[in-house]
Length: 351
Ligand code: SAM
Ligand code: SF4
Image (cartoon, rainbow, N blue to C red; front, side):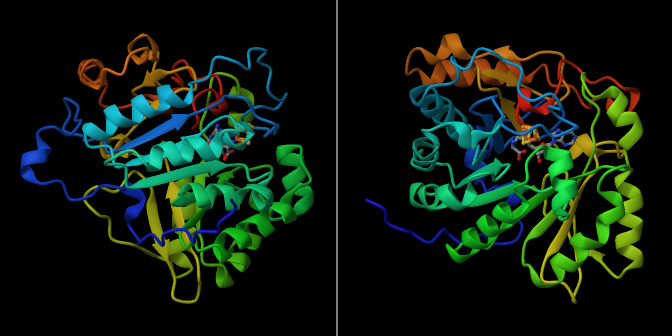
């Protein structure tokens, strides 16, 4: 059966994916010792990737063990436990999640979990045109696609793949299928895409997507590249403000991205500035790796093994364990001091 069900149209501000919890429910919501509430889970389903983004996997995927990723049943148990603790949005990520053949089943399983309102996916989009219908049929609500340059040659130089036009066609198809809230992620790279920055603005004039500029983050593997290519998000923010973009009001449950709009542009711009002061105070997300480890921070020193608790369908015990682990979550990362924790590259845990 290949029914094309139009994707649900999401409203602005739904990024945080928090429904209004009633006071009675509130006590059960996952919260840390610093008053932050976690309604958003980033779930990696594979760490394998077919791209060679120069800031992430410049030599391509080096792992040999392609087995051992979370099974569908383990994913279902994780989703059920988090949903019971107030998680309303799950983003599927990787590596490249679309390399998993059962991705539509993963989407469907998450979408059918009571309490999960939004299922999102981050992908490099390399087979978007072929796969988006199946994802839509399975119930995908939200799509983020990474495009670091709108110059085809530059795109190829950054990712190792000559796929820009195909990916743009895939985004167009996603829009035709009913996704109105598509985000495009672009990492700011001094020596690569900053000289073609204008392409992004030209594109946004007529394209109703949110383009999110992400400040390049240092990881264990990319120190030299980071030193040569980091551009402060604040300099981009000043450019936006000087060109008439205005910052959108933030909702109480919004994540760390700052969002901007402009009356002459169909699209919006988001800025993710992990080096800015107070970035961590609005943290609303936890992460799980494809091997089932809970990471309390993208730059934490360790992941906490959940797998032994996934053997049985015991949501209560799993919830209790996660609540206990959350006590270890620190107020902030120390990325600005070059402390990248255990993260060698983002393909390890999904960004
Ligand atoms: N492969 C998929 C993709 O690229 O969209 C999903 C995984 S990827 C790790 C998730 C996001 O992290 C992408 O938007 C990517 O550009 C971003 N990313 C990877 N390494 C990064 C880094 N060192 N600094 C900032 N963003 C990074
Ligand atoms: Fe792969 Fe995404 Fe990393 Fe690029 S950023 S190498 S597409 S995991």
